[in-house]
Image (cartoon, rainbow, N blue to C red):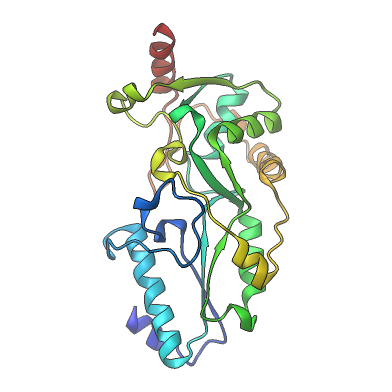
Length: 256
């Protein structure tokens, strides 16, 4: 990081770093809300969140030492056109359109923060040149919601009734593999506060959860994803889905 900062320091007008909600200490899952001064992931650069935290710390330390004009943004779950994580809204749209069961763990009470990609990009562009942002960290999101509400909103957007199957906690350890999106798990039970960004930056998101997914569904249909008949695997995160495994788990839950 120091070598990179040596290249940039004194040569850029403003550096906006895209960090992540994963930069927070993940042992805080379930503590609401997460504000920018809370502890960061201590795991070090070998993990995703640890690397983000290390990079943030290096930039902020350089700012303190030389005035390097860095701003850190921490998005939560970013969705929207060209999403490269394939276990989020894409398979949810397919489950709804194809009338497949939607496996929901933990009673659907896990809370996550969601933001449309266009709102993130707009916020980052608006930060550039804003003196109030230099040397600061900002959570960027559009709000938080439970898994139950997330499923309800996406079902309304698609226009299909969801077939929700609540997974007993006793079955979690025996699952054959991922049978629900990673954001439905308790490890992602986190709510970002965006009060600082609203106060200092005037953050004003264009999309709420519903309108953002209306926009995303339009893109989904334009791309022909409604006709997908086999799992997609993204090249970076290896995220995917297995509708056969989900159907088997749903059948087992219903058998009692």
